[in-house]
Length: 243
Image: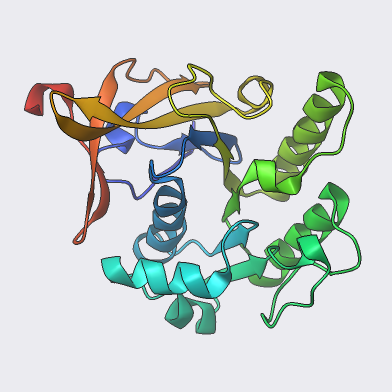
């Protein structure tokens, strides 16, 4: 199986060398667990280390905020945007009907999944993208009445992205210490993989962890692994025997 290296130090060793190509992976976690950093690292390292153009769709944070925050790791998104290796699509202001100042943005005349997918496919074709991030799924604000409708919408996204040839990461929020894996309770069943990030106290210290809960077509680690967010390497995942 063809696999995509994640660019997350220590993670690929847990999933047989990387994410299966053209699959959609769900990364879930509560506030502060590192979902945006994880996603940004996937896109940035894909461009710099593997020559794979990537698209980052932001629905929560302004693009300029992402660019500024990622500089702390030495990740110059703007430079790669100018080189055509990364494209940030702004979906933050369109949700409230305000025009974006970004070069690439969702239209402010209404906001829905179909318009998002049209803009994504257009950008994929224009830049030959191989990687995609949507951060985050709950920000789409699905206005459906039943679980079945939400599941169909997420399945539609997964199908369209897979057919477009990109390997994608979609993030979702979960309540702190909830024991759940997703916002709507259906995303983890539709996605091809599920990576859960958690942040909690252990022995008087705060600890971040990563758990590969699901990865189709992959013999993956079933352990909960400590992770660290470092200035030099971004997110680093550690083997159990090093702890």
